[in-house]
Length: 532
Image (cartoon, rainbow, N blue to C red; front, side, top):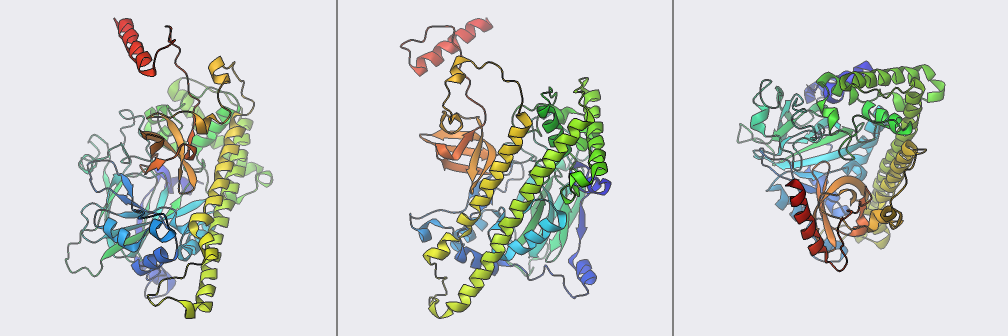
């Protein structure tokens, strides 16, 4: 809808709602968010489950980097899982980030499910914990998600800026992952204003306190700190939750729909990106208003309707998609010339895919809610068996229900659905004659072919596969940097999926009896001769 387009993404509008306004609307002295989740709740969750977290960097001149918090001390269950002392130690160095925590902690699963149902969109809940007095708790960055921030404990200062307009200078920088990983978004350049290098200007400078709500659209740079003007601020840690609206994560935007339609019809895509990330490359060199419209989320009510019962709605969305595609054609001088029926077909397939993804998310959060009920019942029945130190008794049966094992099958379902959508997009595409080397590829080449630094891959991050690049090869293990800056080290080969088949280099010299090092040296020598 038009209202959704004004709220979400690069065309969106940030807003801030103080907690007392929400409390007044509820007819109470404080709103429902207050006292719902504080640090003791996190401490209990760490004791009851096997959780994972990352610690973020604090340099506001460089991209946001993350490192694992957990430091296993042995091979047993208790030695391998993350502990409260490890979290406290990480907090001294930066913000501790719990991604998708709504699927792991039962107390947070209910609100996550409620948000998912209210929006009829697959979404996630993240949690960020920072000690008081951190000068930079999150360096300037943008997110792929539209986020609704709820301050649960303590306070945090937020500075929110308009999206950068330097796409023509840095076309391969993902507008939804600026300031992450290797991309830098220094605070001083953002503060240069509209006439500066990034073309951004400060929109909001606000401190959120317990019960306050802040909304930041996808692609809007923001940075945080917990430096209080008053030294007697009554809290030790700042905790906020982000309810993520994941339209760009799950292909629910016009750019994804356009790509699906073009692929399905074997039409050339002038915006074809340099990697599997469609938000990089020539799309960022389009005029700003066209790029923003193309990256807009599809109407929020899309997954609420049945396409066959609402042909007028689907045709209307198809017309909006066709209009955006025409703008791209005019700006680039190339035309795909697809009929409107092709756009309808692509939208119907994306609707089916999105609906399935939504149901998997609902089931995942319901499973966490049910786990919470089971734990309460068990606690009542086994109170007399509780250890003197208050530690939770971890039976073998309960260990099998830990979120580490409970969540993974749902992400396996999601990966299968993503693969099905991709297969639909490319099905029927003419197959060119494969060269002899490609024909000899292992049928399981994606998980067996050698990897090198820079390879585009999908790698296992907490039970699900996400896009990233090989950052380092160490013996038989690999370090991967994910699209949003997260990093996972020491992955085995079978935990990494190579996205593109290896292309052998055709040598125009006899390599018989030569070692790989000698072949490489000869190639460099011949390349130098060609340049001369």
